[in-house]
Length: 180
Image (cartoon, rainbow, N blue to C red):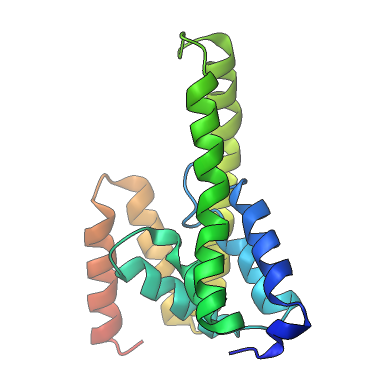
């Protein structure tokens, strides 16, 4: 845990998380990962790349919202206060934005503006998702066998309609069998 919360680490982290949460178009799971990784690992050195990937994996395995890896980052940076603050900072801005949009959305949800927003956000969401996957794979894939397993998993996902849970389970079983 970073003990520099008195020196101003907590407030900038919470403001950053609140602002970045508004870019989580289509869900915050992987969308926020590349930039939060850059911010927490590369810029501020609050976590190592391995700690970030571990926090992300734990959050994905735990029940509840998948964006909870931010809670683990906050915990590492500023203890319990950081964990609670980071979670609120990531969840509340999008909650209030959604509430505002629902309240003031025109009665015609299939109107031109709605279609334009959907068409504009699709490539952004795809790019953010790819960036998140790249950051996690770059950190977790430390050898040729891991890279090959990741590439094979992506190929299976792109070429089949196999449920991602099965791809993950099969990949995990192969990793255990090969002791990756």
